[in-house]
Structure formats: C-alpha cells, structure tokens
Length: 628
Image 1 (cartoon, one colour):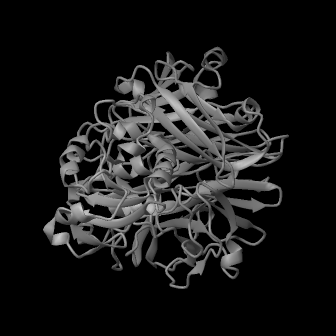
Image 2 (cartoon, one colour):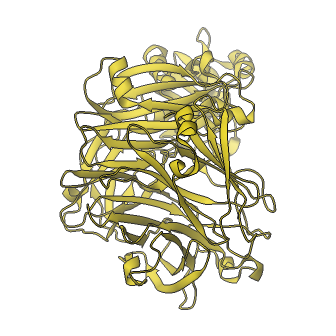
Image 3 (spheres, one colour):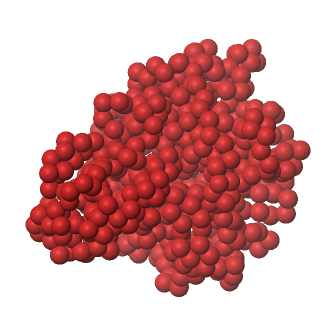
C-alpha cells in the first residue's frame, strides 16, 4: 500500500500529493535521486511518507524532524532524529521536504554539515508555463489533472470530450497539456492544445492523436492537465469507446476521479458467456509490486492477488476469472488497490460486443450513521439514488445495489418507481441486504409489460422497516439490455438528498450554492459520425419541491457561443428522455458541430442526468453526466 494521502471528504484533495505524483514532477524527482547522492531529509510538515512512497530511489541516510514528540518514531521506514542532530549528518546534501521553502533552506543552511547544498522540493516543480497560479505553487488550480483510459487499435477507438467550463469562472487563456502512455508505461506523445477562449468544447480523439504522431496501435492511458484554470481544479470529461468499421461495440464512461483509493467496488462478476476484463492502470512513476493488488468476492476475506508487478504508468488487462474462476453474475467483486490506481475501467465482452464501465471509490471514513434513521420529517425520503428506466418495449432495465464503504455490513433498501409525469407507480422493499448479497432486480418483474413504454425512472431509498444500518453512501450498478440485439450498457452512481430546504450534514448538494439556491449545470455532448446523443434527465425530490422544473437546454457552438435555447418543464419526481435532434433544428445542430454541446441549466432545482449515444442498428451507451 502506498503511504500517501490523496482525497478526504472533509478536507478535499491533497495538493501535495498531486504535486509529487504529476508525471513531470516524477521525472524531476528521479533526476534528483540520480544526482543527489546520500540525503539528509528534513521533514517539518510530515511530507516524507508521501515523498518516499512516490520517489523510492532517493537515498536517505537520516530523517530529521522538528517536533520533539516525533523523535524516535518510525516514519517512512526511518527512525526520526532531532533536527539538532543535522550538523552531524553523514550526507551529500540536505533535502527539505517542502515546496516554496527557500527561506527555511537559508536558515537551516547554518546548521547543515559544512560544504553540502541545502535543497527543497522546488527541485521537483513542474515547468512554470504549466502553472495556472504563479503566486503560489501549491495552489489547487496548478494541478487540475486527471487520467483517462485511452485506446486506438484495429477494432476500437476512444474519444474524450470536455469543455472549457473554467471560462465561466473567469479563465481567459486555457490550454490542455497531454501525455499519452502506452501499455508498458512508455511515453508515446506529449503535446499541448489551446482551448477556446470561451466555454467551448475540447475533444481528444485517439484516431487523430495516432495520425498526428504517426503512432502504432496502442492501449494505455492519457494524462490531461488544464492550464490557466480558475474556480475549479477538477478535469471532468466523458469518454466514448466505439468500434470502427461498423462493428457492434459502443460505450461511454464518466471521468476517472483523479484520486487513488484503497479499495474500489461495483465490479461485476461475468455472466455466462461473458468475459470481464479489469483494466489496471498504474497512476504513478513507481512500480506496483506483485501481490499489492487483490480481488475478492464482495464481503469475503479470500483475496486473490495479482502475482506480477506493474511498471510505472503501465496498463494491464486482467481477466477477473483468472483470479476468481468460480464467481458469476450477479456476484460482485471488491478491488483492493492500495492507492496505486485511480478509478479503473472494466470491459465486458460477449461475442463481438464489448462495453466499458467504471468501478467506484469505496470509502474508508464512513461508519453507520444512526441519524439517517431519524431524519427530520421535512427531509422526506432522505437519500435517493435515481436512475433511468429506458423505454420498456425496447430495453430491459436491471439494478444491483453495491456496498461502497469498508464498514458497510448491510443496507436496508426500497425501490420506488415513477412515471415521466412524476406519478409513483409502485414501491418494492428489497430487504436488508447483507454485504455478500446478489440481489439483482429486473424491472420486468415489478411492472406490467405495458407500463412505461416511453421510459421513466426509479429511486433506491433507505427503508428501515426490518432494521439495518445506513451511511449515506448509497450506490448501485444499473444494467440495460436492448431486447432485440442483446447490446448492453451499464452505469453506476451514488445517492444524495435532493431538493429540500432543510439540510443534513453536507446534503443536499448543488453545483453552485446551497439550499434554497439549488441549481443544475449538466454537460451533454453532441453526437458524431452517425452516433446520436440522448439524455435521460431526472427531477428527483426527497420532499415536495417546485411542481415543475424550469430547465433550459442551451446549445453551444465549438467556441462556446450560445446558439439556441429551449425550455422544458419536468414534473417533480418525473423525468424526460430527449435527444438534441428533437429539441433543436438541423441548422442549429450543424452550426454547433461535433464539438458543440448542450448545457442543461436550471436555477430552480437540482436535476440528475444520464447520457449516451445510439445508432440505428441498436447500439447504445449510457453513463451518468458531469456537472460544473
């Protein structure tokens, strides 16, 4: 397990981790290790565990601390010595484990052994032209980064779509910096692209990258950094994986979530005739040791290790059946990743068809919350997990709740089903599901065949009629199957409290503001090359809210210019399944082009959405949308 601090839900992201893990910083740290020789490491702020985890090539002869209570403790494999011992250090240099520590270095130079340099982590800074803020190196906006699974071969290509949403926060000169790694972790290409000056779209198409740099077929990962950002330090995107030459595969996934985690969950075991491939992608410049990553059936302590190491920034395809040969859908798999990888993708193959989806972060900080059982009545049904029911004549819709916290032992759940008009059609108590459950629900078993011909939505909610515990981190996997072709797509997400005046801890959430200023800003990409975009938009409400939404569908061009607006009204607890082609004219969509997008904007409530692409031959994709 890497001894690093990444993301904490109370504190947010750890900028120091981002600064040390950046691929260019990793190169600088390797160069420092090669020339520094023996190092006396001064750790004033507790950064040495992360530094030595991410730069193990540094040769440390002694670790020196200022806090007297830390003297003699084991820190990152070294016995902490008092800073007063520094003059006697046997070293070729002193390294202060801190950025922007020039003043400290000047002062400590008086206490260092004679004739050796005193260095700081400024030796590992990324280049100045990649900084959004020159004033403070550890400003979060300097490390607006993420990874994406990226592939281009003879059968499948990938296309990353995002937008310059930082323009809405005042950014005026945005650029995107990219590094493409192959399956072995070698760099295939590095480049920068200018972003539109306004809130325009940005697309990275694997076919264009392959042609631009004359690359062979590749499967690896794309590192992406937004430079010049303001107001938001997260790179969000949608990633399409599509078959070339009219083959049947098509899928879309949400952004990778830039923070490595101890565990991930929501990985399905294969159904009969399926192969589930977990794509493991090393997010760091240090190798993952053999045995450091394991799989286990959810709720069981039998761990099957990956017995081969994984090189820095390398990508490995793991057939989960090789480690867990007797496990079958709807069983779930837990990935113990030791903070080595960001949210991985998995690929389900059945014959010539494949689909890609992602697992989710399993939280270590959550415990059962007894307060959820006694929420104020004004909070209504409390935590909701909304998901679409696609038109039932064409699609099957299935739901599988997924434990998503280390100490989640059981989950009491009910399924509420709604029409597009917000009418509650039925409710079904799923029971108190143990961590090991395989409680797959097929909506065909709960609804008559004629119900919801145009689709609708359902919501998972906590229901304590038979006991059980809740932690507020309610998740599930949703699988959709086209009845005629057998093509499938799947998505997963977590629950929130939606659209209430009262709050409970950090809920309800909004993209900007808090109750009563709940609002929506969702990104819907447009189609390309015969793939048509669609959106399943849901108006969930834990308690009665406004009778109808006031939702604007804003069509933006490739430069971010607003081209057209359509207003729709969604009933409370209702939904809307729409296509841009049904809302905007052909001329308007032609003006927007393939790099345009629809911004779903509502100042009256928080909506939740799922998006995808579809073709006339039955292919489709689906995943939850991102907002900003």
